Image (cartoon, rainbow, N blue to C red; front, side, top):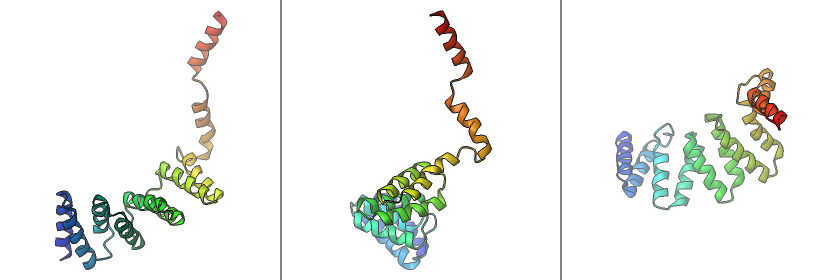
Length: 169
């Protein structure tokens, strides 16, 4: 049964019994291949493959998970990183775009994706990713100048001390 296979996979994984975890996760996936929600056996299967240094199997598992609608940001980031490492840059960017739907405020990811888009010769898309960070602070355009001034001008007391010091010298 699906629940038993999923439980067995999790228990084997917790004991670092990677082969047993792989076998049980594969059984759970065979019974219910659409299980891509939290606690998905796909993610556990991919992690067990990584532990056994079976990178190609982990990549195939995560790609299947993603194509079926899996949305765990950490699993998808692992997939994107692996796709990038094997020179599948367009696929890596597509996965990163999926991550944006479930983790839109991961600003480091937007920056990395911007870098990848620049490498792919897509500067406008890269600019869109880089600009996400500029919109996060408050979200209201009318507050930007005040925030900008506060963060880029020396504090008034520091300025007064500096002026007094220079007058004495």
